[in-house]
Image 1 (cartoon, rainbow, N blue to C red):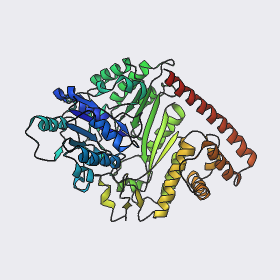
Image 2: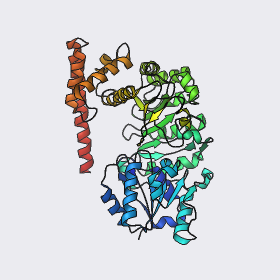
Image 3: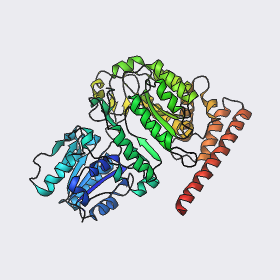
Image 4: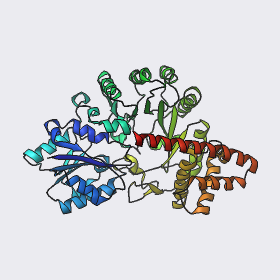
Length: 486
Protein backbone atom coordinates (compact mmCIF):
# COMPACT_ATOMS: atom_id res chain seq x y z
CA UNK A 1 0.00 0.00 0.00
CA UNK A 2 1.26 3.45 -0.96
CA UNK A 3 0.56 6.06 1.70
CA UNK A 4 1.78 9.15 -0.15
CA UNK A 5 1.56 9.89 -3.88
CA UNK A 6 3.52 12.87 -5.20
CA UNK A 7 2.29 14.08 -8.56
CA UNK A 8 2.17 16.93 -11.04
CA UNK A 9 1.29 17.64 -14.66
CA UNK A 10 4.35 18.33 -16.81
CA UNK A 11 4.23 20.10 -20.15
CA UNK A 12 5.55 16.98 -21.90
CA UNK A 13 6.84 13.53 -21.05
CA UNK A 14 10.51 14.47 -21.44
CA UNK A 15 10.20 16.84 -18.47
CA UNK A 16 10.78 15.40 -15.01
CA UNK A 17 9.64 17.30 -11.93
CA UNK A 18 12.64 18.14 -9.79
CA UNK A 19 10.39 19.55 -7.05
CA UNK A 20 8.66 16.21 -6.45
CA UNK A 21 12.01 14.48 -6.26
CA UNK A 22 13.31 17.01 -3.73
CA UNK A 23 10.30 16.30 -1.53
CA UNK A 24 10.56 12.51 -1.77
CA UNK A 25 14.29 12.56 -1.05
CA UNK A 26 13.55 14.38 2.21
CA UNK A 27 10.58 12.32 3.42
CA UNK A 28 12.69 10.38 5.90
CA UNK A 29 10.88 7.30 7.19
CA UNK A 30 7.83 8.18 5.09
CA UNK A 31 9.73 7.76 1.84
CA UNK A 32 9.39 3.96 1.88
CA UNK A 33 5.61 4.22 1.47
CA UNK A 34 5.63 6.99 -1.12
CA UNK A 35 5.72 7.10 -4.90
CA UNK A 36 6.11 9.69 -7.65
CA UNK A 37 3.68 9.46 -10.57
CA UNK A 38 3.77 12.27 -13.13
CA UNK A 39 1.28 13.08 -15.85
CA UNK A 40 1.18 15.32 -18.91
CA UNK A 41 -1.00 18.32 -19.63
CA UNK A 42 -3.88 17.27 -21.84
CA UNK A 43 -4.43 13.84 -20.28
CA UNK A 44 -8.01 13.05 -19.33
CA UNK A 45 -8.92 14.18 -15.80
CA UNK A 46 -10.88 11.00 -15.07
CA UNK A 47 -7.99 8.78 -16.13
CA UNK A 48 -5.52 10.68 -13.94
CA UNK A 49 -7.82 10.46 -10.92
CA UNK A 50 -8.35 6.73 -11.54
CA UNK A 51 -4.59 6.10 -11.64
CA UNK A 52 -3.97 8.15 -8.51
CA UNK A 53 -6.68 6.36 -6.53
CA UNK A 54 -5.36 2.96 -7.66
CA UNK A 55 -2.54 3.49 -5.17
CA UNK A 56 -5.13 3.69 -2.36
CA UNK A 57 -3.26 6.69 -0.92
CA UNK A 58 -3.89 8.53 2.30
CA UNK A 59 -2.17 11.69 0.98
CA UNK A 60 -1.72 13.08 -2.52
CA UNK A 61 0.73 15.96 -2.94
CA UNK A 62 0.44 18.15 -6.03
CA UNK A 63 3.09 20.40 -7.56
CA UNK A 64 1.16 23.40 -8.91
CA UNK A 65 2.59 25.76 -11.51
CA UNK A 66 1.29 28.48 -13.77
CA UNK A 67 1.14 26.09 -16.74
CA UNK A 68 -0.83 23.33 -14.97
CA UNK A 69 -3.02 25.08 -12.39
CA UNK A 70 -6.23 24.94 -14.44
CA UNK A 71 -6.03 21.22 -15.14
CA UNK A 72 -4.78 20.43 -11.64
CA UNK A 73 -7.79 22.27 -10.20
CA UNK A 74 -10.10 19.94 -12.15
CA UNK A 75 -8.25 16.90 -10.83
CA UNK A 76 -8.42 18.07 -7.22
CA UNK A 77 -12.12 18.93 -7.58
CA UNK A 78 -12.91 15.46 -8.90
CA UNK A 79 -10.81 13.79 -6.20
CA UNK A 80 -12.75 15.64 -3.52
CA UNK A 81 -16.01 14.41 -5.08
CA UNK A 82 -15.12 10.72 -5.46
CA UNK A 83 -12.60 10.26 -2.62
CA UNK A 84 -13.09 13.01 -0.03
CA UNK A 85 -11.17 11.01 2.57
CA UNK A 86 -7.90 11.44 0.63
CA UNK A 87 -5.88 14.35 2.02
CA UNK A 88 -4.74 16.82 -0.64
CA UNK A 89 -1.58 18.86 -0.03
CA UNK A 90 -0.60 21.53 -2.53
CA UNK A 91 2.78 23.14 -3.12
CA UNK A 92 4.60 25.09 -5.80
CA UNK A 93 4.94 28.71 -6.92
CA UNK A 94 1.39 29.10 -8.21
CA UNK A 95 -0.15 28.37 -4.79
CA UNK A 96 2.44 30.19 -2.70
CA UNK A 97 0.69 33.57 -3.03
CA UNK A 98 -2.86 34.95 -3.20
CA UNK A 99 -4.08 31.70 -1.68
CA UNK A 100 -7.51 32.92 -0.64
CA UNK A 101 -8.35 33.87 -4.23
CA UNK A 102 -7.71 30.44 -5.74
CA UNK A 103 -10.33 27.71 -6.05
CA UNK A 104 -7.70 24.96 -5.97
CA UNK A 105 -6.54 26.17 -2.55
CA UNK A 106 -10.11 26.24 -1.28
CA UNK A 107 -10.57 22.63 -2.40
CA UNK A 108 -7.35 21.33 -0.86
CA UNK A 109 -6.80 20.28 2.73
CA UNK A 110 -3.38 21.93 3.15
CA UNK A 111 -1.17 24.35 1.22
CA UNK A 112 2.60 24.71 1.60
CA UNK A 113 4.08 27.99 0.40
CA UNK A 114 7.68 28.39 -0.74
CA UNK A 115 10.15 25.59 -0.12
CA UNK A 116 8.52 22.23 0.49
CA UNK A 117 11.52 19.95 1.11
CA UNK A 118 11.15 19.82 4.89
CA UNK A 119 7.66 21.18 5.50
CA UNK A 120 5.84 18.60 3.37
CA UNK A 121 7.30 15.82 5.51
CA UNK A 122 6.22 17.56 8.72
CA UNK A 123 2.67 18.15 7.49
CA UNK A 124 2.41 14.59 6.20
CA UNK A 125 3.66 13.18 9.52
CA UNK A 126 1.07 15.20 11.40
CA UNK A 127 -1.70 14.00 9.06
CA UNK A 128 -0.66 10.37 9.42
CA UNK A 129 0.35 10.21 13.08
CA UNK A 130 -1.20 13.28 14.70
CA UNK A 131 -1.82 15.69 16.05
CA UNK A 132 -3.63 16.85 12.89
CA UNK A 133 -2.40 20.25 11.64
CA UNK A 134 -4.59 23.09 12.85
CA UNK A 135 -3.56 25.50 10.10
CA UNK A 136 -4.40 25.01 6.45
CA UNK A 137 -1.51 27.12 5.14
CA UNK A 138 2.06 26.28 6.13
CA UNK A 139 5.01 28.51 5.26
CA UNK A 140 7.84 26.38 3.91
CA UNK A 141 10.98 26.25 6.00
CA UNK A 142 14.29 27.20 4.40
CA UNK A 143 16.98 25.18 6.16
CA UNK A 144 20.66 25.40 5.18
CA UNK A 145 21.11 23.49 1.93
CA UNK A 146 23.64 21.23 3.65
CA UNK A 147 20.78 19.81 5.74
CA UNK A 148 18.76 18.73 2.71
CA UNK A 149 19.05 15.40 0.96
CA UNK A 150 19.78 15.94 -2.74
CA UNK A 151 17.11 14.56 -5.07
CA UNK A 152 19.21 12.89 -7.75
CA UNK A 153 18.77 9.35 -6.46
CA UNK A 154 15.05 9.77 -7.17
CA UNK A 155 15.67 9.85 -10.91
CA UNK A 156 14.85 6.39 -12.24
CA UNK A 157 16.66 4.51 -14.97
CA UNK A 158 13.74 5.39 -17.26
CA UNK A 159 14.19 9.06 -16.41
CA UNK A 160 17.87 8.87 -17.25
CA UNK A 161 17.23 7.07 -20.52
CA UNK A 162 14.37 9.21 -21.82
CA UNK A 163 14.19 12.53 -19.98
CA UNK A 164 16.17 15.69 -19.46
CA UNK A 165 17.40 15.72 -15.88
CA UNK A 166 16.92 18.95 -13.93
CA UNK A 167 19.69 19.77 -11.45
CA UNK A 168 20.60 22.74 -9.25
CA UNK A 169 23.98 23.85 -7.97
CA UNK A 170 22.34 26.77 -6.15
CA UNK A 171 18.95 28.12 -5.15
CA UNK A 172 17.65 31.64 -5.17
CA UNK A 173 18.77 34.81 -6.90
CA UNK A 174 20.38 38.02 -5.63
CA UNK A 175 18.67 40.20 -8.24
CA UNK A 176 15.31 41.92 -7.79
CA UNK A 177 13.71 41.98 -11.25
CA UNK A 178 10.08 42.70 -10.46
CA UNK A 179 8.57 40.41 -13.12
CA UNK A 180 10.26 37.34 -11.60
CA UNK A 181 9.46 35.37 -8.44
CA UNK A 182 13.15 35.33 -7.66
CA UNK A 183 12.77 39.01 -6.78
CA UNK A 184 11.50 37.75 -3.42
CA UNK A 185 14.71 35.83 -2.65
CA UNK A 186 17.20 37.38 -0.28
CA UNK A 187 20.21 35.97 -2.09
CA UNK A 188 21.49 32.88 -3.93
CA UNK A 189 22.43 29.89 -1.76
CA UNK A 190 25.00 27.43 -3.17
CA UNK A 191 25.04 23.70 -2.55
CA UNK A 192 28.43 22.41 -1.42
CA UNK A 193 30.26 22.06 -4.75
CA UNK A 194 32.10 18.78 -4.20
CA UNK A 195 29.00 17.06 -2.80
CA UNK A 196 26.96 18.31 -5.74
CA UNK A 197 29.54 17.14 -8.30
CA UNK A 198 29.69 13.75 -6.61
CA UNK A 199 25.96 13.42 -7.23
CA UNK A 200 26.44 14.49 -10.85
CA UNK A 201 29.07 11.80 -11.25
CA UNK A 202 26.66 9.18 -9.93
CA UNK A 203 24.12 10.27 -12.52
CA UNK A 204 26.80 10.20 -15.21
CA UNK A 205 27.88 6.69 -14.23
CA UNK A 206 24.24 5.62 -14.45
CA UNK A 207 24.12 6.85 -18.04
CA UNK A 208 22.85 10.42 -17.74
CA UNK A 209 24.01 12.62 -20.60
CA UNK A 210 21.53 15.54 -20.54
CA UNK A 211 21.64 17.96 -17.62
CA UNK A 212 19.50 21.08 -17.34
CA UNK A 213 20.56 23.45 -14.56
CA UNK A 214 17.72 25.43 -13.00
CA UNK A 215 20.07 27.86 -11.24
CA UNK A 216 18.99 31.45 -11.87
CA UNK A 217 22.56 32.73 -11.83
CA UNK A 218 24.89 29.89 -12.80
CA UNK A 219 27.85 32.15 -13.61
CA UNK A 220 27.57 34.40 -10.56
CA UNK A 221 30.49 32.65 -8.84
CA UNK A 222 33.12 32.08 -11.53
CA UNK A 223 35.17 29.70 -9.37
CA UNK A 224 32.23 27.35 -8.86
CA UNK A 225 31.09 27.70 -12.47
CA UNK A 226 34.55 26.66 -13.65
CA UNK A 227 34.51 23.50 -11.56
CA UNK A 228 31.13 22.49 -12.93
CA UNK A 229 32.05 23.25 -16.53
CA UNK A 230 35.30 21.35 -16.15
CA UNK A 231 33.37 18.37 -14.76
CA UNK A 232 31.42 18.10 -18.02
CA UNK A 233 34.38 18.91 -20.24
CA UNK A 234 36.42 16.09 -18.66
CA UNK A 235 33.68 13.58 -19.47
CA UNK A 236 32.79 14.73 -22.96
CA UNK A 237 33.78 12.57 -25.93
CA UNK A 238 32.60 12.64 -29.52
CA UNK A 239 31.52 9.02 -29.22
CA UNK A 240 29.59 9.65 -26.02
CA UNK A 241 28.64 13.35 -25.92
CA UNK A 242 27.14 15.28 -23.00
CA UNK A 243 24.64 18.13 -23.18
CA UNK A 244 24.39 20.75 -20.41
CA UNK A 245 22.03 23.73 -20.19
CA UNK A 246 22.79 26.77 -18.00
CA UNK A 247 21.10 30.10 -17.33
CA UNK A 248 23.67 32.90 -17.47
CA UNK A 249 23.77 36.41 -16.10
CA UNK A 250 24.33 38.28 -19.38
CA UNK A 251 26.77 40.97 -18.24
CA UNK A 252 29.06 38.74 -16.15
CA UNK A 253 31.39 36.57 -18.22
CA UNK A 254 34.98 36.90 -17.01
CA UNK A 255 37.84 35.76 -19.21
CA UNK A 256 38.50 32.69 -17.11
CA UNK A 257 34.99 31.41 -17.92
CA UNK A 258 35.37 32.29 -21.59
CA UNK A 259 38.54 30.20 -21.83
CA UNK A 260 36.73 27.10 -20.61
CA UNK A 261 33.54 27.70 -22.61
CA UNK A 262 35.61 28.00 -25.79
CA UNK A 263 36.90 24.45 -25.28
CA UNK A 264 33.48 22.83 -25.61
CA UNK A 265 32.48 21.40 -28.99
CA UNK A 266 29.25 22.24 -30.77
CA UNK A 267 26.17 20.63 -29.23
CA UNK A 268 27.60 20.35 -25.73
CA UNK A 269 26.47 23.62 -24.15
CA UNK A 270 23.29 25.67 -24.27
CA UNK A 271 23.05 29.01 -22.52
CA UNK A 272 19.73 30.59 -21.66
CA UNK A 273 20.38 34.31 -21.31
CA UNK A 274 17.75 36.71 -20.06
CA UNK A 275 18.20 40.11 -21.66
CA UNK A 276 14.46 40.87 -21.22
CA UNK A 277 14.87 44.49 -22.38
CA UNK A 278 17.62 46.80 -23.61
CA UNK A 279 15.60 49.86 -22.56
CA UNK A 280 17.46 51.45 -19.63
CA UNK A 281 14.41 53.38 -18.43
CA UNK A 282 12.35 50.19 -18.31
CA UNK A 283 15.18 48.35 -16.58
CA UNK A 284 15.25 50.98 -13.84
CA UNK A 285 11.46 50.89 -13.53
CA UNK A 286 11.39 47.11 -12.88
CA UNK A 287 14.54 47.07 -10.71
CA UNK A 288 16.65 45.20 -13.23
CA UNK A 289 20.37 45.88 -12.99
CA UNK A 290 22.10 45.16 -16.28
CA UNK A 291 25.06 46.62 -18.10
CA UNK A 292 23.71 46.51 -21.65
CA UNK A 293 27.00 47.18 -23.37
CA UNK A 294 28.74 44.45 -21.41
CA UNK A 295 25.86 42.06 -22.03
CA UNK A 296 26.03 42.78 -25.76
CA UNK A 297 29.79 42.28 -25.74
CA UNK A 298 29.38 38.89 -24.05
CA UNK A 299 26.68 37.77 -26.46
CA UNK A 300 28.85 38.80 -29.39
CA UNK A 301 31.77 36.84 -27.95
CA UNK A 302 29.63 33.74 -27.43
CA UNK A 303 28.43 34.00 -31.04
CA UNK A 304 31.84 34.48 -32.61
CA UNK A 305 34.26 32.69 -30.27
CA UNK A 306 32.30 29.76 -28.81
CA UNK A 307 30.21 26.88 -30.14
CA UNK A 308 27.60 27.16 -27.40
CA UNK A 309 23.96 27.38 -28.44
CA UNK A 310 22.45 30.70 -27.30
CA UNK A 311 18.79 30.97 -26.30
CA UNK A 312 18.12 34.61 -25.38
CA UNK A 313 14.94 35.96 -23.77
CA UNK A 314 13.09 39.23 -24.37
CA UNK A 315 9.83 40.23 -22.65
CA UNK A 316 7.14 42.24 -24.41
CA UNK A 317 4.67 44.27 -22.36
CA UNK A 318 6.92 45.55 -19.57
CA UNK A 319 5.76 48.87 -18.10
CA UNK A 320 7.17 51.80 -20.05
CA UNK A 321 8.17 49.69 -23.07
CA UNK A 322 6.56 50.85 -26.32
CA UNK A 323 6.39 48.74 -29.46
CA UNK A 324 8.99 51.01 -31.02
CA UNK A 325 11.46 50.70 -28.13
CA UNK A 326 10.91 46.93 -28.00
CA UNK A 327 11.65 46.78 -31.71
CA UNK A 328 14.89 48.69 -31.24
CA UNK A 329 15.98 46.19 -28.60
CA UNK A 330 14.88 43.26 -30.74
CA UNK A 331 16.91 44.49 -33.71
CA UNK A 332 19.93 44.98 -31.48
CA UNK A 333 19.60 41.43 -30.20
CA UNK A 334 19.21 39.96 -33.70
CA UNK A 335 22.46 41.66 -34.65
CA UNK A 336 24.30 39.87 -31.85
CA UNK A 337 23.62 36.48 -33.43
CA UNK A 338 21.76 34.30 -30.90
CA UNK A 339 20.52 30.98 -32.22
CA UNK A 340 17.09 31.50 -30.67
CA UNK A 341 15.24 34.54 -29.40
CA UNK A 342 12.48 33.64 -26.98
CA UNK A 343 9.91 36.37 -27.52
CA UNK A 344 7.96 36.17 -24.26
CA UNK A 345 4.83 38.05 -23.20
CA UNK A 346 4.85 39.53 -19.69
CA UNK A 347 2.97 37.35 -17.19
CA UNK A 348 1.58 38.41 -13.84
CA UNK A 349 3.19 35.75 -11.72
CA UNK A 350 1.48 35.61 -8.33
CA UNK A 351 3.54 37.36 -5.67
CA UNK A 352 5.81 39.32 -7.99
CA UNK A 353 6.29 43.07 -7.36
CA UNK A 354 5.37 43.92 -10.96
CA UNK A 355 1.78 44.51 -9.82
CA UNK A 356 2.80 47.83 -8.24
CA UNK A 357 2.82 49.27 -11.78
CA UNK A 358 -0.72 48.09 -12.58
CA UNK A 359 -2.50 51.40 -11.99
CA UNK A 360 0.18 53.89 -13.12
CA UNK A 361 0.74 52.04 -16.41
CA UNK A 362 -2.84 50.81 -16.89
CA UNK A 363 -1.66 47.21 -17.05
CA UNK A 364 -4.41 44.73 -17.87
CA UNK A 365 -3.73 41.00 -17.54
CA UNK A 366 -5.75 38.02 -18.66
CA UNK A 367 -7.76 36.57 -15.75
CA UNK A 368 -6.77 33.04 -16.79
CA UNK A 369 -3.42 31.29 -16.52
CA UNK A 370 -0.78 32.09 -17.63
CA UNK A 371 -2.05 35.64 -16.87
CA UNK A 372 -0.38 37.33 -19.82
CA UNK A 373 -0.64 41.06 -20.26
CA UNK A 374 -3.27 42.03 -22.84
CA UNK A 375 -2.87 45.83 -22.78
CA UNK A 376 -1.18 48.74 -21.04
CA UNK A 377 -0.92 52.48 -21.53
CA UNK A 378 1.63 52.10 -24.32
CA UNK A 379 0.28 48.95 -26.02
CA UNK A 380 -3.35 48.49 -26.96
CA UNK A 381 -5.12 45.13 -26.94
CA UNK A 382 -4.65 45.00 -30.70
CA UNK A 383 -0.93 45.77 -30.30
CA UNK A 384 -0.54 42.88 -27.86
CA UNK A 385 -2.42 40.54 -30.18
CA UNK A 386 0.01 41.41 -32.94
CA UNK A 387 2.97 40.90 -30.58
CA UNK A 388 1.62 37.50 -29.53
CA UNK A 389 1.25 36.40 -33.14
CA UNK A 390 4.76 37.68 -33.88
CA UNK A 391 6.05 35.49 -31.03
CA UNK A 392 4.25 32.41 -32.32
CA UNK A 393 5.38 32.85 -35.93
CA UNK A 394 8.91 33.64 -34.78
CA UNK A 395 9.02 30.25 -33.10
CA UNK A 396 7.73 28.53 -36.24
CA UNK A 397 10.06 30.24 -38.67
CA UNK A 398 13.12 31.64 -36.88
CA UNK A 399 13.57 29.49 -33.78
CA UNK A 400 12.75 26.25 -35.60
CA UNK A 401 16.04 26.45 -37.49
CA UNK A 402 14.29 25.29 -40.67
CA UNK A 403 14.56 28.64 -42.48
CA UNK A 404 18.24 29.46 -41.99
CA UNK A 405 18.75 30.67 -45.58
CA UNK A 406 15.30 32.19 -46.04
CA UNK A 407 15.08 34.08 -42.73
CA UNK A 408 17.63 36.79 -43.70
CA UNK A 409 15.35 37.70 -46.61
CA UNK A 410 12.52 38.30 -44.14
CA UNK A 411 14.63 40.31 -41.71
CA UNK A 412 16.95 42.51 -43.71
CA UNK A 413 17.20 46.22 -42.85
CA UNK A 414 14.83 46.18 -39.86
CA UNK A 415 14.23 42.68 -38.44
CA UNK A 416 11.40 43.63 -36.08
CA UNK A 417 9.43 45.80 -38.49
CA UNK A 418 9.88 43.41 -41.41
CA UNK A 419 8.97 40.29 -39.49
CA UNK A 420 5.95 42.09 -38.02
CA UNK A 421 4.77 42.87 -41.55
CA UNK A 422 5.18 39.18 -42.42
CA UNK A 423 3.31 38.17 -39.25
CA UNK A 424 0.44 40.55 -40.05
CA UNK A 425 0.27 39.20 -43.61
CA UNK A 426 0.38 35.55 -42.54
CA UNK A 427 -2.45 36.02 -40.06
CA UNK A 428 -4.53 37.97 -42.56
CA UNK A 429 -3.95 35.21 -45.12
CA UNK A 430 -4.51 32.16 -42.92
CA UNK A 431 -6.45 33.38 -39.89
CA UNK A 432 -4.51 31.01 -37.63
CA UNK A 433 -1.35 30.74 -35.56
CA UNK A 434 -1.16 26.96 -35.07
CA UNK A 435 -1.36 23.72 -37.00
CA UNK A 436 0.73 24.69 -39.99
CA UNK A 437 1.98 21.75 -42.03
CA UNK A 438 5.66 22.32 -42.78
CA UNK A 439 5.15 22.15 -46.55
CA UNK A 440 2.37 24.76 -46.33
CA UNK A 441 4.49 27.00 -44.12
CA UNK A 442 7.27 26.98 -46.70
CA UNK A 443 4.68 27.87 -49.32
CA UNK A 444 3.37 30.81 -47.30
CA UNK A 445 6.88 32.14 -46.70
CA UNK A 446 7.65 31.86 -50.40
CA UNK A 447 4.45 33.63 -51.44
CA UNK A 448 5.10 36.49 -49.05
CA UNK A 449 8.72 36.94 -50.14
CA UNK A 450 7.72 36.96 -53.81
CA UNK A 451 6.05 40.32 -53.08
CA UNK A 452 9.25 41.96 -51.85
CA UNK A 453 12.20 39.99 -53.22
CA UNK A 454 13.56 38.54 -56.47
CA UNK A 455 11.81 35.21 -57.10
CA UNK A 456 14.99 33.38 -58.13
CA UNK A 457 16.73 34.41 -54.90
CA UNK A 458 13.70 33.32 -52.87
CA UNK A 459 13.39 29.96 -54.61
CA UNK A 460 17.09 29.23 -54.16
CA UNK A 461 16.94 29.92 -50.44
CA UNK A 462 13.69 27.98 -49.99
CA UNK A 463 15.07 24.98 -51.89
CA UNK A 464 18.10 24.69 -49.61
CA UNK A 465 16.02 25.06 -46.45
CA UNK A 466 13.40 22.54 -47.61
CA UNK A 467 16.03 19.93 -48.36
CA UNK A 468 17.70 20.44 -44.99
CA UNK A 469 14.33 20.26 -43.23
CA UNK A 470 13.55 16.96 -44.99
CA UNK A 471 16.92 15.55 -43.97
CA UNK A 472 16.31 16.67 -40.37
CA UNK A 473 12.82 15.10 -40.43
CA UNK A 474 14.12 11.81 -41.80
CA UNK A 475 16.88 11.79 -39.16
CA UNK A 476 14.37 12.44 -36.36
CA UNK A 477 12.10 9.64 -37.60
CA UNK A 478 15.07 7.27 -37.72
CA UNK A 479 16.07 8.18 -34.17
CA UNK A 480 12.51 7.57 -32.94
CA UNK A 481 12.45 4.22 -34.72
CA UNK A 482 15.77 3.20 -33.20
CA UNK A 483 14.56 4.14 -29.71
CA UNK A 484 11.41 2.09 -30.28
CA UNK A 485 13.44 -0.91 -31.42
CA UNK A 486 15.67 -0.65 -28.35
